[in-house]
Amino acid sequence: MKIVPSKPTSTARAAALLSLLTMAPLVFTGCNNTGKAAATPANFTTGINNHYLDHPECLLTDTRFPFETSDPEKTKQLDTLVKNLLLEKSVETSIHVSRYTVAPAGTRYAPRFCYGHREVTSINSFTPVAVANGFKETTITYSYTMKEVPVWAESHDVQAAFPAMARATTSQATDTITLAQSPVGWQVPD
Image (cartoon, rainbow, N blue to C red; front, side):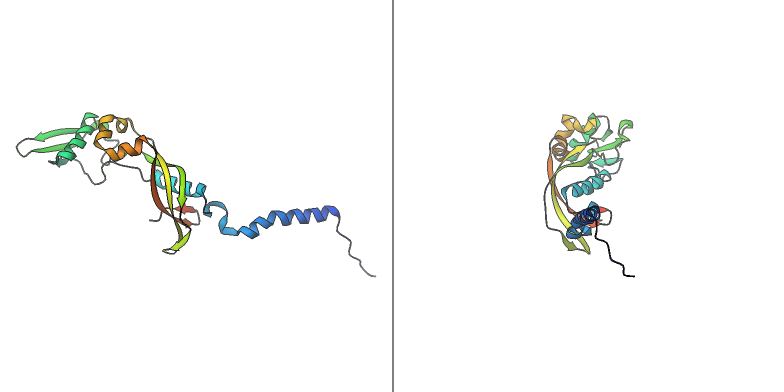
């Protein structure tokens, strides 16, 4: 007895063609160009925003309280935090030194007095992805605004005393950052 293969039906041909068409984009794009690892503005935005959630912007990165100074510029800056009830001040007139301690209202922000975190508003450009330090990396130029800015950081006297903070909190700013590709997406290398 001879077995003759049957001809595929039009339904079977349509199903085969449909599966071929749905698999074609995966074959031509490759596995690394999909999902969180793709070099796309959306993935870069996610990586940068995740980084800055854990890295807020702060006024004082290397100051411990109580803090003493005779520097007129530093005194002017810290006096604005006194005016906003975040610090308390005493003056040692004999040695011309001002001593600052954290006020009760300032304990939430001391000792660094962080004033928010960056949130990307747009990816302006990025360099071609290249291997550096064993990882695929790119340098991103992005625009951002500050989120979760406390009321004291919006006061005119604090903004006048800390112009870099004023620029960061009152307008859209631009910066660059390097991101590295990882299995869970794009991240700022440590």
